[in-house]
Image 1 (cartoon, protein in one colour):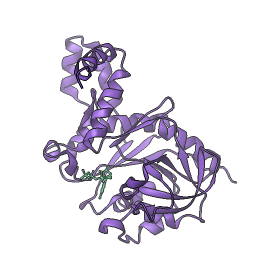
Image 2 (cartoon, rainbow, N blue to C red; image 1 turned 90 degrees about the horizontal axis):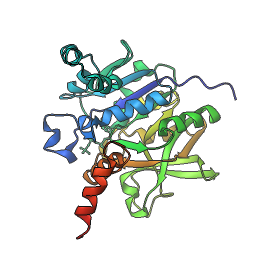
Image 3 (cartoon, rainbow, N blue to C red; image 1 turned 135 degrees about the vertical axis):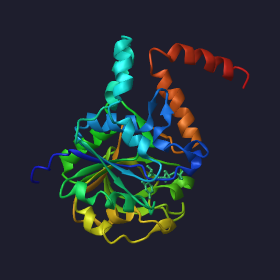
Length: 294
Ligand code: UTP
């Protein structure tokens, strides 16, 4: 195996409509919803940075401009905070600044599917490997989920997707793996199916919103073929690269919260606040009060 190209780029699709969070998402992007005190998009950027990502591409749509503003410098705010000597508040702003020229945004004019969203980043991707992070999935882990995937990418030299077991009756919500060799952590991918019915699903291993893909996927994506739900599915194009490049699923270590749905989002608030030394005791206290009569 020749040495894999360094992984430096990440694509973050944020052009979806976020209908499951209406009315909140009527006038703000889903990715700006906060878990504790940070927007979902910040968790994704932090995770990507930990994996060595240096260049970011947001796939945006109408009504998503606040995401771009979020990563800009807030001159007036910072000047006021400095004047008032609000050191902690200034410190809290730091992760939201991205080096000049390292963040680009591309518009997906119509939300035609995740595959179409990634195709919109084709100029950014060029001939390089790239990560995809869906910001509505957040993962609580000692080593960030994308870092674990990046390690597996350098080990295998091919595409790697984060996978987790789901109840068989839920396979019709996810991209599902047809599995080959499996060492309990790294699973060879023999096939991929988007949202199969439980009786047709080749396994119950589903892909979560973290991927590292090699550029071989782009010619397949460019065909813009529609799949499940009439959308251009990323899973279908990934399936076509099997055999062209090594392709693995990684059972990552950590806990994933699907913040694209309400229960996952609420659970994430509890889990991440219990992880915060400044909040944990208070949160435990009120949880006890709420739960004692359940
Ligand atoms: P979802 O399936 O969660 O769709 O997309 P959504 O529109 O965000 O939310 P709901 O289902 O209406 O509540 C998964 C990810 O893919 C992006 C979304 O922004 C989200 O990060 N996406 C999806 C796009 O960027 N473009 C698309 O055409 C579809």
